[in-house]
Length: 363
Image (cartoon, rainbow, N blue to C red; front, side, top):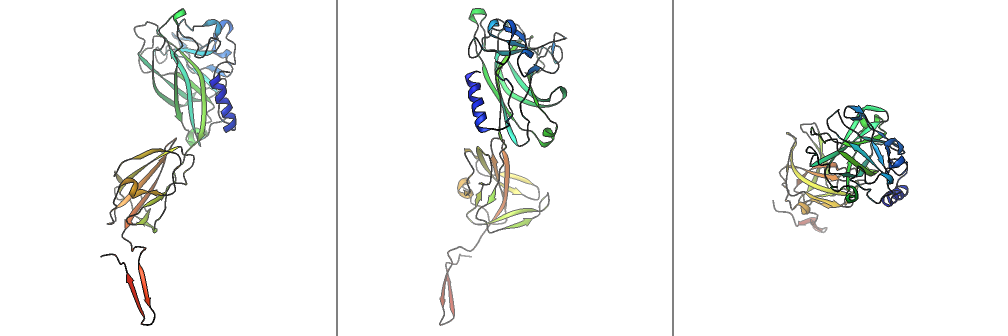
């Protein structure tokens, strides 16, 4: 196993149980006879949906030490003894297009954020129609089903990286990654495989060879934002365009919020808005705060953080908290009121039946 994959595998065993993993993501479990063979010789890997080469059924390739450099142009990423996969196209949407599929170990959930990553290499083939950059894409599949799918974009431009040939061949590879989640409906579809392929953009790739290696799938729990009032004096119900809504009440000038009920967050940011309940429209005031690394605190000093002096004329405000990695959000609607200060002082004259109140705010 390659060093990178060994480290990731060990960390996965320590931190995750029944985690989804790519089977044989480094392509080392498999023997490419003669150094060049069908992808199916790599354990856990299969040809993707709609495999075509010049209008005929085709298969992706597995490259090994005895066929390096691959296509005379690309060497392995970490050394001459390592395997990797190759595919071509697309020359068109249906004429030439290859892809690879891996049936993952474990089941997907709707409560985790997934990260898919792999290395990709492109070689220069001197074709006039070889595009300057390409992109890859992934799809969740059900094994043996090429109809149901969930598209996972990978918005990374991959340039031509390897210009040498034969003894001048190079091993320039680029790491790409993308994150995704599943809705409840997508989870219920029962996806259990990932397909990886070049993205067709309407431009011929000149039957270009594209190589991938070290495919890794990791997951972490979905982060959930939770925002509550910290020093409010109560809650009132107000009518809005979408029906009654709870609005927190605070005493001017201090507004504090508690975000410590958020879970699995790695970063967070905060935004403040003036809000029109009748029109259900928001106008941002002050800067966007963040992203800030770490957990959301329990005592967010809103007025100090945003440098805002809140109106006490009934204006409704909305505080928005968003947490990474999947940027889930929660909201707190509130108004600020003039209240009697805590510093009211009472002097009681029991003999004469008098009560003297001092420190009364000016009217």
